[in-house]
Image (spheres, rainbow over the protein chains, first blue to last red):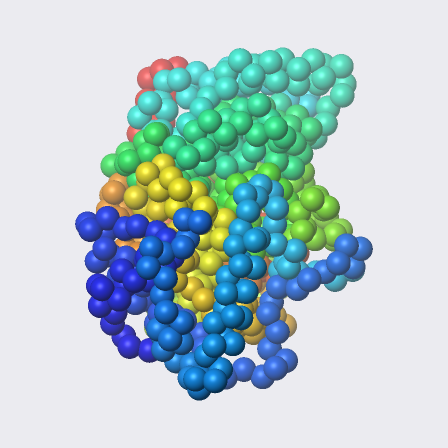
Length: 62
Length: 63
Length: 472
């Protein structure tokens, strides 16, 4: 994953998500996107199959 | 749907973004699967009350 | 006699029970203070004078007949305006929900009403509990009672400001990443984020289903305990609600803390993040107090602060976007700039990253449980500094902000913010006390013991005290 994203590429992502950002806020959003990408890269670590999600499905009564 | 981009993003571009590689023989069937998934996502994208919560919950207690 | 607005719930309750204090007189006093001062503070979005006076008269009638319900009977409170109130607008401080009138009370709203509280009004919040201090919403942001030029923090901004200013005896906030504890810290009050599942979320406008917590904000931890006596109820309508025995909150805060083991998460504020030296000094002084009270104090190690920040951001943004996606696309102009931008970020998180964040969340919960085998409570700062000037918080979405609070939204742990002194500029310092799941009573006991051992609860915002004095 590249550490930066071009304005054009970020615009594609915005278009795909169906959301619009004003030109004044584009840079802030693009920077925030890159920070988010860095977070997700850090969370992507090797895990055993026993590392289950913290959220569980508990049927009623259990 | 408001979430459909004016110009659909080609599946090849999506695969490249996610770092996935498929051969040409897979691409066609993959397109069909992706379309099915998009339809499924669209079908459940209905107006919901904010009272409708995910059924998976954080559970720190036992009974 | 202490001025009515300076009484704590614990002080007022026996007077109300003994019919020495009238709920009508008490409520009228609060309404008159709101009328006089809230124009400067903006703690309230909506004041409910007629309804409050009617409820006060009803409470008075009940108490006079001997039907006293308990320590909250006749106590005037406020609700953050994301708690549903039947027939009364619940706006989320947003143009999008300006005309949203719920058909039913939130479970917590109902429980508090059944306990005999008097609802003074609905309190201001960051838009949908996420938007930040915004100036482009239908209502202005709340200000900090200790200095009106400063920020009260959020998102439960009005809930914090109203308590510190003496415009409510108790309030309800919500906390997804620190929204009860942050305003409690900057407004110099006590605010509890209970264990996840202990207080119902049913009927509270959601931000992030699995990180949202509702909880009390009061002048003292003892008052928070009295609120929790009413709030901690299993609710089958909340999928996350815990079916557990209610701890003895009121009894716990009367006990001492001798022999308790306190773990200090020192790396959080000494190497993982920078904090204001005055906040650190306040914590070091508090640790001395705890040693004097007979506690054993030791350092402990958790994962770095940033590990929690990553996981919390991925989960909270995903869940918030899932809830807001449709309206964000259809009517983005009805959101303020800050809420719109912050929620939009959820569009860029993929399902696999959300699921992996949930897996990492499991690891972090297991890790903290291990640490709690050797200590009874943890201590670290609530906020890295004191309240900045109103508007100085800005967006800062693209900059890393260390948060000592969202750690415990992820782990679901009970976490309390208390006032640990005052800065040279007269702004409140803060400290966070954290416990094992469902040991909220112990956390409140530690907070209450600290408040009783120090004199910080004797000091009210001077500006307000002087004005109140002039008015009386």
